[in-house]
Length: 207
Image 1 (spheres, rainbow, N blue to C red):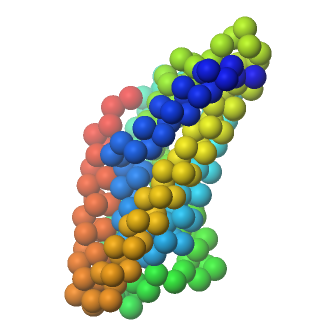
Image 2 (image 1 turned 45 degrees about the horizontal axis):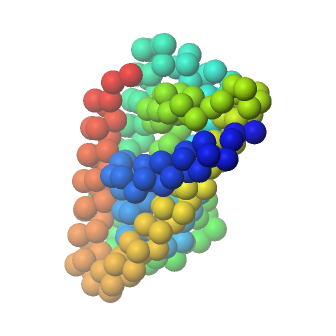
């Protein structure tokens, strides 16, 4: 088990990291503003699912392999950038009527998978976990993989709280903007530009 003092310190740092500007919370903000609160929460759940996968990778040592392989790192980040460009194209071409804020079951699943793909195709997350988590692991307190899993769960909880709040506040602004067709179109364009910016940022990330 992770010692209580280490767990509390890790959770506090995780909350601060969630509040700091980054591609994931920007992604949640834009999806919530353009598609509504439910979409933002579903994207958040998808991102957290990706975090669970990264946690498992660190616990199993896979993140270390990725960090040591420049080719694997490059392929993964290019795949993530390509997916963001795809989202940017879709946002730019989306009709105004699509910004209703009401997601159906199918589009709800699409929002969730967007979050999963967005997180999994960012190799920096796994490498960050690999560098961040060991600082809070105490080998004398039990199996290291189990402690990594526990810390990953705390990180996911912090992300749910912070990103869920982002989704709620952004959706309030978005609901006001969606009353105007011109504002809806502007939101679409803004989302497209943000996705392109995130793609460019990801391409320039170094291992």
